[in-house]
Length: 172
Image 1 (cartoon, rainbow, N blue to C red):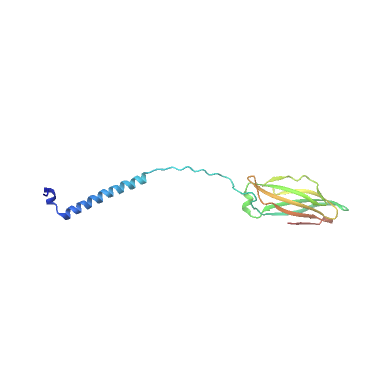
Image 2 (cartoon, rainbow, N blue to C red):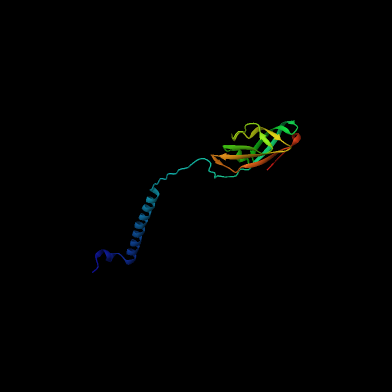
C-alpha cells in the first residue's frame, strides 16, 4: 500500500530530487575534502653545508713563468736570482680561498740558496729564489700544488735548466 507522500510525487520529480540531493551531498563532501586538503600544514627541516666541496686531486691548471732577475758568474759556478709567478688559467679560480704548496728541488748540479716557503696564501702568486749552478748545466724541479679547503689539487710541475752566461730554459 502506498503512502500518501509517495503518491503525490511523480516518479520523475522523485528522481530529480534524489539527483539534486546527491549532487549537493557529494558536492559538499568534495568542498569540505578540498578545504581539508588546503588547510593542512606541514613543516620540513633542511640542513645546508656551506663551503667548497672538492675531491683529492682536483684539477686547476696553472700558468707558471720564470723570470731571471740577476745572475753572477764565477767560471763554472754561478748564482742566479729567479722570480717565479703563477696564475690560475681560469679567472674564476683566482677568487677562491686558495693556498699554494711550493717545492723547488735540485735535480742535477745545483743548490737552492734561499729558503723557499713550503706554502703561500692564494693572494701571493710569486716567489723569488736564488739558485746556484755548479757545472755547465744545473736542473731544478718546481712543483706548485693548489690547496682548497685543505684538499690538494693536481700539482703543476716545471723544469728549470740553468745554463752558462745567464741563459736558462723553463719548461713542463
